[in-house]
Image (cartoon, rainbow, N blue to C red; front, side):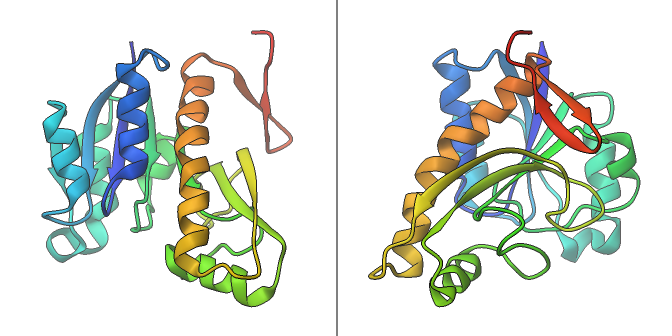
Length: 205
Protein backbone atom coordinates (compact mmCIF):
# COMPACT_ATOMS: atom_id res chain seq x y z
CA UNK A 1 0.00 0.00 0.00
CA UNK A 2 1.10 3.56 -0.75
CA UNK A 3 2.32 5.12 2.49
CA UNK A 4 2.62 8.80 3.42
CA UNK A 5 4.06 10.91 6.21
CA UNK A 6 2.25 14.16 6.98
CA UNK A 7 4.20 17.08 8.47
CA UNK A 8 2.29 19.64 10.53
CA UNK A 9 2.80 22.79 12.60
CA UNK A 10 -0.63 23.85 13.84
CA UNK A 11 -4.28 22.94 14.07
CA UNK A 12 -4.15 20.32 11.35
CA UNK A 13 -7.26 21.00 9.27
CA UNK A 14 -5.37 19.98 6.12
CA UNK A 15 -4.30 16.80 7.92
CA UNK A 16 -7.93 16.18 8.84
CA UNK A 17 -8.92 16.43 5.18
CA UNK A 18 -6.43 13.65 4.40
CA UNK A 19 -7.61 11.49 7.31
CA UNK A 20 -11.21 11.92 6.16
CA UNK A 21 -10.28 11.03 2.57
CA UNK A 22 -8.61 7.82 3.78
CA UNK A 23 -11.52 6.87 6.02
CA UNK A 24 -14.15 7.47 3.36
CA UNK A 25 -12.09 5.39 0.89
CA UNK A 26 -11.36 8.27 -1.51
CA UNK A 27 -7.67 7.60 -0.84
CA UNK A 28 -6.21 4.10 -0.89
CA UNK A 29 -3.20 5.09 1.19
CA UNK A 30 -1.91 4.63 4.72
CA UNK A 31 -0.88 7.60 6.85
CA UNK A 32 2.20 5.95 8.30
CA UNK A 33 3.11 8.83 10.60
CA UNK A 34 2.46 12.45 11.46
CA UNK A 35 5.45 14.61 12.37
CA UNK A 36 4.96 17.91 14.19
CA UNK A 37 7.38 20.82 14.31
CA UNK A 38 6.14 21.75 17.79
CA UNK A 39 4.83 20.02 20.91
CA UNK A 40 1.20 20.29 21.96
CA UNK A 41 -0.30 21.22 18.60
CA UNK A 42 -3.82 20.10 17.85
CA UNK A 43 -2.75 18.38 14.63
CA UNK A 44 -0.95 15.74 16.73
CA UNK A 45 -4.12 15.17 18.76
CA UNK A 46 -6.04 14.64 15.53
CA UNK A 47 -3.54 11.97 14.48
CA UNK A 48 -3.61 10.22 17.85
CA UNK A 49 -7.42 10.08 17.80
CA UNK A 50 -7.10 8.04 14.60
CA UNK A 51 -4.32 5.80 15.95
CA UNK A 52 -1.66 7.31 13.71
CA UNK A 53 1.88 7.25 15.07
CA UNK A 54 3.20 10.74 15.89
CA UNK A 55 6.65 12.28 16.30
CA UNK A 56 7.84 15.75 17.22
CA UNK A 57 10.94 17.26 15.61
CA UNK A 58 11.54 20.77 16.94
CA UNK A 59 14.16 23.30 15.88
CA UNK A 60 14.79 23.85 19.56
CA UNK A 61 15.88 20.24 20.00
CA UNK A 62 17.44 19.45 16.62
CA UNK A 63 18.45 22.87 15.25
CA UNK A 64 19.79 22.67 11.70
CA UNK A 65 19.65 18.85 11.90
CA UNK A 66 15.81 18.87 11.90
CA UNK A 67 15.54 17.79 8.26
CA UNK A 68 18.04 14.98 8.89
CA UNK A 69 15.92 13.72 11.80
CA UNK A 70 12.80 13.77 9.62
CA UNK A 71 14.69 11.81 6.96
CA UNK A 72 15.74 9.30 9.60
CA UNK A 73 12.08 8.80 10.56
CA UNK A 74 10.75 8.53 7.01
CA UNK A 75 13.46 6.86 4.90
CA UNK A 76 12.35 3.45 3.66
CA UNK A 77 8.98 3.79 5.41
CA UNK A 78 6.93 6.11 3.21
CA UNK A 79 6.43 6.78 -0.49
CA UNK A 80 5.46 10.44 -0.14
CA UNK A 81 5.94 13.27 2.37
CA UNK A 82 3.06 15.74 2.60
CA UNK A 83 3.60 19.18 4.13
CA UNK A 84 0.18 20.16 5.48
CA UNK A 85 0.63 23.56 7.10
CA UNK A 86 4.24 22.74 7.99
CA UNK A 87 6.12 25.95 8.69
CA UNK A 88 9.71 24.71 8.86
CA UNK A 89 11.89 24.59 5.74
CA UNK A 90 13.24 21.21 4.69
CA UNK A 91 16.82 21.15 3.45
CA UNK A 92 19.76 18.88 2.86
CA UNK A 93 19.72 15.16 2.13
CA UNK A 94 15.96 14.67 2.48
CA UNK A 95 15.41 16.71 -0.71
CA UNK A 96 17.60 14.27 -2.64
CA UNK A 97 16.24 11.13 -1.01
CA UNK A 98 12.63 12.22 -1.64
CA UNK A 99 13.16 14.02 -4.95
CA UNK A 100 9.71 14.69 -6.45
CA UNK A 101 8.21 12.83 -3.47
CA UNK A 102 7.52 15.79 -1.19
CA UNK A 103 4.49 18.02 -1.74
CA UNK A 104 3.36 21.18 0.00
CA UNK A 105 0.13 23.15 0.06
CA UNK A 106 0.59 26.93 -0.18
CA UNK A 107 -2.28 29.40 0.35
CA UNK A 108 -1.85 31.45 -2.83
CA UNK A 109 -1.59 30.96 -6.57
CA UNK A 110 2.16 30.41 -6.97
CA UNK A 111 4.26 32.20 -8.22
CA UNK A 112 2.33 35.07 -6.61
CA UNK A 113 2.59 35.73 -2.87
CA UNK A 114 5.08 33.00 -2.05
CA UNK A 115 8.69 32.53 -1.04
CA UNK A 116 10.59 33.19 2.21
CA UNK A 117 8.46 34.70 4.97
CA UNK A 118 5.18 34.19 3.12
CA UNK A 119 3.05 31.86 5.23
CA UNK A 120 -0.24 31.80 7.07
CA UNK A 121 -2.14 35.06 7.42
CA UNK A 122 0.84 37.01 6.04
CA UNK A 123 -0.02 35.65 2.59
CA UNK A 124 -3.64 36.73 2.79
CA UNK A 125 -2.74 40.15 4.17
CA UNK A 126 -0.40 40.72 1.22
CA UNK A 127 -3.07 39.54 -1.23
CA UNK A 128 -5.67 41.95 0.16
CA UNK A 129 -3.21 44.84 0.27
CA UNK A 130 -2.30 44.27 -3.38
CA UNK A 131 -5.87 44.57 -4.63
CA UNK A 132 -5.79 41.42 -6.77
CA UNK A 133 -9.18 39.97 -7.60
CA UNK A 134 -8.27 36.29 -7.29
CA UNK A 135 -6.14 34.21 -4.96
CA UNK A 136 -6.29 30.53 -4.12
CA UNK A 137 -4.06 27.63 -3.20
CA UNK A 138 -1.36 25.55 -4.84
CA UNK A 139 -0.07 22.03 -4.32
CA UNK A 140 3.53 21.94 -5.47
CA UNK A 141 6.58 19.76 -5.18
CA UNK A 142 9.26 20.76 -2.71
CA UNK A 143 12.81 21.50 -3.80
CA UNK A 144 15.67 23.65 -2.49
CA UNK A 145 13.90 26.87 -3.49
CA UNK A 146 11.14 27.97 -1.10
CA UNK A 147 7.81 27.43 -2.91
CA UNK A 148 9.83 26.86 -6.08
CA UNK A 149 9.03 23.28 -7.08
CA UNK A 150 6.81 22.12 -9.93
CA UNK A 151 3.13 23.00 -9.57
CA UNK A 152 0.76 20.03 -9.41
CA UNK A 153 -2.69 21.49 -8.69
CA UNK A 154 -4.18 24.95 -8.19
CA UNK A 155 -7.60 26.25 -7.27
CA UNK A 156 -8.64 29.90 -7.53
CA UNK A 157 -11.03 31.80 -5.25
CA UNK A 158 -12.32 35.36 -5.62
CA UNK A 159 -10.95 38.10 -3.37
CA UNK A 160 -13.68 40.48 -2.27
CA UNK A 161 -13.09 44.14 -1.49
CA UNK A 162 -14.55 43.62 1.99
CA UNK A 163 -12.33 40.62 2.80
CA UNK A 164 -10.19 40.49 5.90
CA UNK A 165 -7.23 38.11 5.94
CA UNK A 166 -9.21 35.71 8.12
CA UNK A 167 -12.25 35.53 5.82
CA UNK A 168 -10.06 34.99 2.78
CA UNK A 169 -8.08 32.34 4.63
CA UNK A 170 -11.27 30.46 5.49
CA UNK A 171 -12.45 30.47 1.86
CA UNK A 172 -9.08 29.24 0.62
CA UNK A 173 -8.84 26.54 3.30
CA UNK A 174 -12.03 24.98 1.95
CA UNK A 175 -10.26 24.56 -1.39
CA UNK A 176 -7.07 23.28 0.26
CA UNK A 177 -9.11 20.50 1.83
CA UNK A 178 -10.18 19.40 -1.66
CA UNK A 179 -6.99 19.64 -3.70
CA UNK A 180 -4.53 18.24 -1.15
CA UNK A 181 -6.23 14.82 -1.01
CA UNK A 182 -6.68 15.02 -4.79
CA UNK A 183 -2.93 15.54 -5.24
CA UNK A 184 -2.14 12.58 -2.98
CA UNK A 185 -4.59 10.44 -4.98
CA UNK A 186 -2.91 11.35 -8.29
CA UNK A 187 0.53 10.51 -6.93
CA UNK A 188 -0.57 7.29 -5.23
CA UNK A 189 -2.09 6.11 -8.52
CA UNK A 190 1.04 6.97 -10.54
CA UNK A 191 -0.76 9.62 -12.58
CA UNK A 192 1.96 12.29 -12.48
CA UNK A 193 5.06 12.53 -14.65
CA UNK A 194 7.64 15.26 -15.11
CA UNK A 195 8.26 16.86 -18.49
CA UNK A 196 10.76 19.71 -18.79
CA UNK A 197 10.57 20.35 -15.06
CA UNK A 198 6.78 20.59 -15.07
CA UNK A 199 4.31 18.16 -13.52
CA UNK A 200 1.99 16.56 -16.06
CA UNK A 201 -1.20 14.80 -14.96
CA UNK A 202 -1.87 11.62 -16.90
CA UNK A 203 -5.63 11.46 -17.32
CA UNK A 204 -5.99 7.98 -18.75
CA UNK A 205 -3.47 5.97 -16.82
